[in-house]
Length: 220
View 1: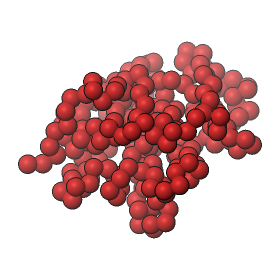
View 2: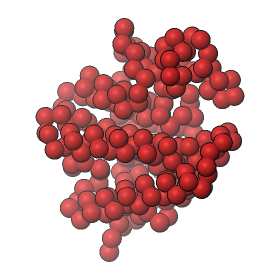
View 3: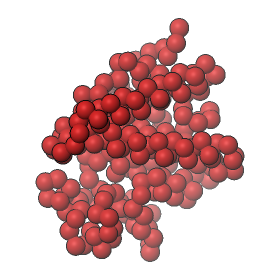
């Protein structure tokens, strides 16, 4: 096994790591953590790994990573010799990827939190989370629509990067919180493009490609 992932199967952030590993064909072990209702991520043995008490946690040898974007970057740097998933050699592309990695935290804090409220009753400002999620989707829609005029299907460049994987999970899972994609055709096409990638893996709420509707034109 190349690494061990402390994992909760319903977590969007944990799924990002499983998805990246699947796309790269990286074998790994998972350790199930009872996030809800058990709260095991706050147990002493988990806090010893990650004092912040969050999931996922990735362990590879003596390295422990606790931030999902860092895990995606490590996977790409370690297991993608082409350098396409994390295009560090291209300064502009690398900077644009980093912007979307940062943007993914907005999706987690809005669509992700709204989903936790819907699934487990987490106390949040629901209206604020929904407004934030829809604002984030509008921003993605504008960007992806502009890119589609040049034939771009992904967030950066002409191929998928870790930016797409960082943003994919909580967009794809947003219907769990009642935030649908019908008003965002370019986002729908992007979701379809990510689902079409060889090695794509599923989770509860994110289904196989053949179960999805056909993509729609992003513009006339």
